[in-house]
Length: 287
Image (cartoon, rainbow, N blue to C red; front, top):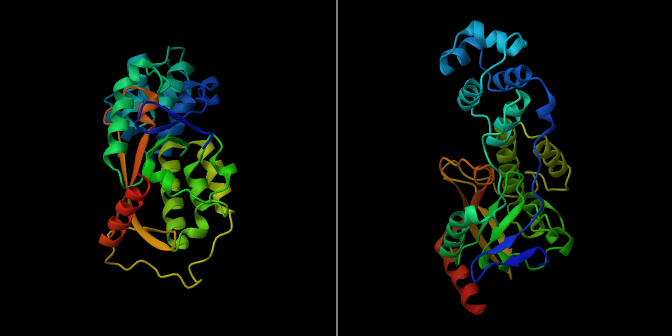
């Protein structure tokens, strides 16, 4: 994979350009706060009570009649659960310096975070695991993940590698996903939830792209998950054997760096004993 760079003997790290602050930074701070409040479906009274300020003061801030302090912006955006990147945008719109740094993962300050990701990815072997950013672009992966990518179009492996596109594209994993209708519905549901939480325009564009990719319908003979199922597995065919795996997501707790706040580790654990044994055999055969 041309997108891969090795750091020692640990995970495969994938590098791509970092994103600048959103264009919202040029808009009035009151407009941004009002948008986030409405996006969270809160009234001015709800937000004012939760952030412990007067409704009148909040109204003045949103209308531009009053300039919020740095502390007030941080209090309001924390209560609104605004992503760290967008909190910086609101601060800049009000004339303040950003509060949260965005360092590349190669930065020495994030060495502990890199080591943690390495430890998690290696520790999950022989089960596939990977780290993605907020746009589902691949950041790092373990050997088990790479073993599942045989036959994927090289174009989809060019950086930046988008994991959702890789999964649902006809030239990616999609032809080998036995329960593609269910897995596709699961991924698109997660993406919609992420859009609802972040209001990220790039994710909206990604959703539109994925929605028009060819895919079989639920009426195409695929089995629907039973009500007793605890989660939707991904059933991926590899070398004539179907692996059934459940996905789990891990994030850094209480991050104050944008890069870490937007990083998630996706692991695929066996949904049955047969899959666990097959993944172990695949790992042994590659040694």
